[in-house]
Image (cartoon, rainbow, N blue to C red):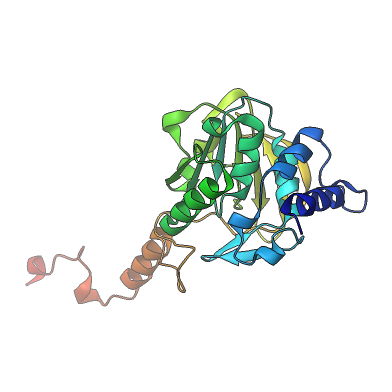
Length: 247
């Protein structure tokens, strides 16, 4: 079947009251334009409303992507940063709305960065900038951003990201631990809107990788291991004891 017809059917179902994920005409038009085939491994499932996996990251279902994008509420010519680029689909939809040169994306996993670049080019959005960065640090070289979309969960809004918003900008981010809420945060770091519950993987920090079988230990874990090791030392191993002065 013609992919354009499949896209129309997909968006029709997301606009229907049974799902009601797409409300704005602008987003509906954008999702009808952006092909999903470059972003999924199995093209036969490109327009099914289900999640997938690629290179160790989750491919958002169309309904989940729509919820995020509706919360972002992009306007034409907005500057947008996507944190956790993943396969690049949400960045492509945003590029359709605001223009590809106005969309920047970062991901901490280098393999995903390369994959997202290739996917975006194949989908027709080669002008989207995708860089390998620690998501919590954002992309300060190009700030301020009108909108920031974070596709990973955090307990609190990352201060460095909020600082990269324009004065009236908005950041969309899943906040919480076991129970997460899709939240909108302003440039002061305050939560101004909530858009229901979600379930996302936690934001990775430098030293963790999403595309490996076993993630590397983070600096926090290394510090805890070092502290426990220090507490287990015998007296003669403690560096703070001046043994020479007691001979």
